[in-house]
Length: 275
Length: 293
Image (cartoon, rainbow over all chains, first blue to last red; front, side, top):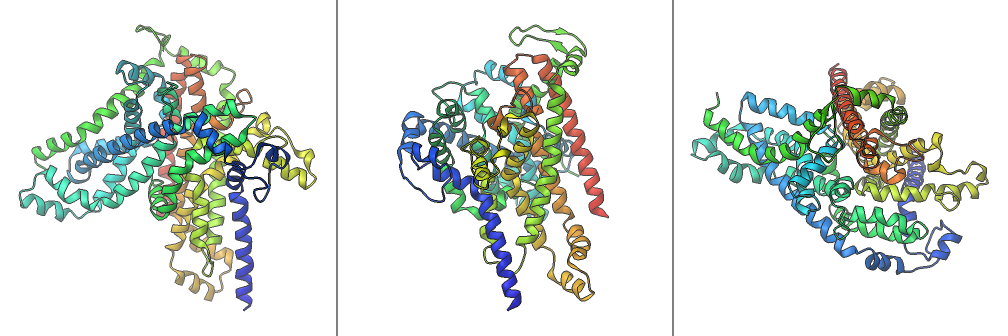
């Protein structure tokens, strides 16, 4: 009985701390639906004292929500498709073929994981221009592919190494070539890590700001993150619109997160095992 | 012994992704290295070899010291803060009889899925003077004298940035510690309790050693992430006031796009790359050795 009471009081402390932790999010959500006047009078209230959808619709209409959704969506889908297909293919020999070339390649890949994108920023802008890829969805998706590839290859190689060698040997004896072994035997077996990779890289590409900011400045083609950031100057005095924009920008990934939280947590923590 | 054919096929497998990396990752990085020894205006095809002049100019620039200091603060304080809080929270959540453990996990993990721009804009509003949450609370409890322009004061801005950054990033670290704790067999604690070990002693002799792999992963993860971060500090303060919250990644961006000082930008990139590589190798080595003991 006594232990029970102690557990209860501990739980209460945890609830209060967790409540404080989530406060910034709650504050953003609640203020997106309150009127301008009530926000300036009572910036922080426990519940909606006024309720309006004006700012959500403002962001929709004045900040081209659907258009930016389309650009962010296409870049994410394209980049994730490239990362998943090309990196799982590339990881196959790294995990299965014993040769010095692949050992060295793997070490270089692991080293590349820690490099920040900014170090290539200056030449990259010129490279993109020369390839006629700047200001295009393809250009951004390819840059994301190149810079996320080391980590994706690292994850895939690690996972493929846990698959028993006998499986591949049996496939060779049955006359299966490497491509068919990869496609028919390995691809189905590595589904868990593919699911994790889809979540990790979709989140990262979707949330990216810098690549899109420097490579896609055409005002007709902004990603959601760049669009939200550029709204800051215009709506600094009307922060409600920005709060509404934040909700809209996060909505797709939040919906995914709420439906697949277990996979998300598993995937993104698998993502932490880097370096 | 692998046959030559298998090696060749393997190279073919790696070819597509390697080509993409070559053009958009490897060649640009080497170009950065090459350009750091040259005088280049960013437009013309020609550039002149100038030796280490860019590096010397970098040393002389007035903002560079503050930038380096900020970066060190972010990754050192950030690493300690995030890991300490996450570990403490994980220990608190790893109890039998808690009703909402998985719910807590989701709540603390939630910010890490949000985009850096969104989190930065939320914290801008938290730190607003007068109507921000922090100032509102201070006013309520009668401490409005403490209120200030949180993101506008040189001595305060980095602390504010690090607190917001820790809030943003703590979820992943917490979940990894929680998974590590849950893999420790309960019997160990039970027998330690029978032997008369106290709470703290149990933590020191059982929890910490068995958690070593999780600690390694978390420290590395937070360090590398903090050193790579750009979007979050950029959207929170743009490095301001002046350069008092500028970290190296932002400085490189400013050299490239605001000041058009490509020489300084490439030189700083090279120095930073070497620093990150050395630091990660040292960390992997020393943490790995500690783990084996």
